[in-house]
Image 1 (cartoon, rainbow, N blue to C red):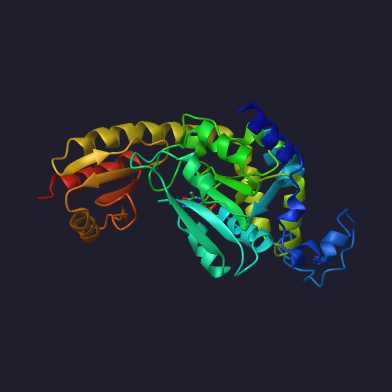
Image 2: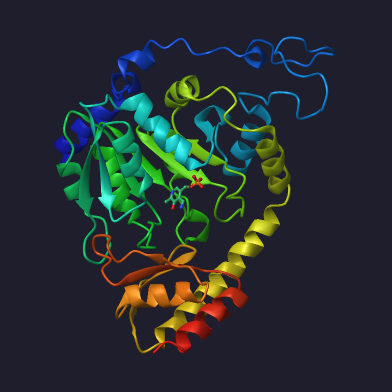
Length: 357
Ligand code: PMP
């Protein structure tokens, strides 16, 4: 046991990201924009072929998003050099494929059922996806995950709290996977602000093969603005930055997120309200005769197993209430995923369900 641990530690100390990066990306000369070449402030800007009228939106935004990165890094107690900002977490997910996975050769592992974009990005990038199932109780089997890894595995996606199962994955199992494998492990924490468990950011500096995804789309209430955070070792951030579109985050997004960051109390208030509503909704759904099971949730939604879920789904849709039918997803037969809304919205849902026969 001790010998095995020493071997793992030795392997980790030699972990080298460049070995995982595609050769064309290692050799890439990134596009240098006008704003890259002159990042300072000046009185006359005639370098970027912008329109001199319609200030301030006539100007390209900062391609390195320096100010916003500093603010977010401070809030999350991380080094700004270890942060990548994308057009939603979805941009970070896609860029991980483009930087690390050689199409037609490499593979990634997803632990299903989970967020669908990992599989879509794998297909778009012509990368094999190996699916490992969660256990029946939605817990993570770390040995099944590490057992699916081979020399061409580049990414393992673990979503915690997981969408659509709504549970957090066991922290020790996550760490065991991270400490065992030689590829990058992506822990998607889109819903972490609703969770009782803290995420993995505090251990990030010591884990060279860890990527943590978070987003402004959920607890911060800014899904329309599109801003996702990807935290990782600085070398990987450098490769992602070299591949991204030069101005991937708009000036409107930068300004709006900075404004929200000045008022974190609003986010905390919303999270409190949503958690209270979640408990109330779970209790009331549980008393409906056709509801079989409500899975314990660590997120802002509930996975609910019921009799004839497709009929319930259609019934609600006919009444203008849209939930997500997850009944065709592995391990989720008979399940609808219901986002926690305002008290009024949840009341309308319950009223409709109480009239269902
Ligand atoms: N990760 C998970 C687990 C999600 O459920 C979602 C969106 N539903 C995302 C990422 C995408 O987030 P974003 O809006 O930041 O692209």
